[in-house]
Image (cartoon, rainbow, N blue to C red):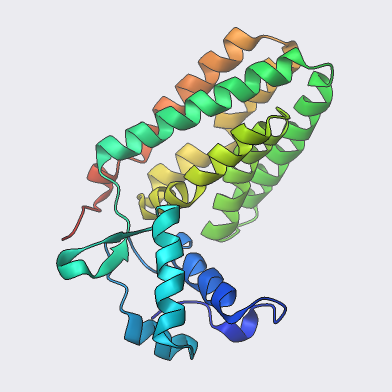
Length: 229
């Protein structure tokens, strides 16, 4: 198993929680690829925990949508089809579009726009400083999570968070050049600008264009990753 050992994780958490974090990190950073089988024995030996602990962690990851049953019941890293990738981005667009409307309707719109521009600076720095892929993905998704948080709608944020795991897998499995285009700060900046102007219609249209472009750039069928049995 290529993954994070438990020794590097906080001791304040339980063994199950630490195993869960290690496995989730291995999946969302691409150490495990979509379609890879997850053997309980191998993982238990690598993490020095019981198979029962691993089984519980995998069950939790299955609830998060990161793990799915494969052939003969063996669990594997989830592999989204092109249709599922499209649906994932469409749901994100709906959630983030609502966030945009609620931000613009609030009296703190300019503060929100300034916060988003700070997030854009971090995204730009991640790409210009030669940061690793994980840092780039964190900066990209961090912008979108902040957009949702600035809406002040806790249910919206909670729902978006449920999409975060599968989204990371999609991004990590996409071809490098296409992935970078989808995550660039340039493609995000017009969203913050429209919010600053208070133009909800333009902001939602820009968001739609951004998501449609991301679907095109992250098309896993053309990126060379296909579902396995």
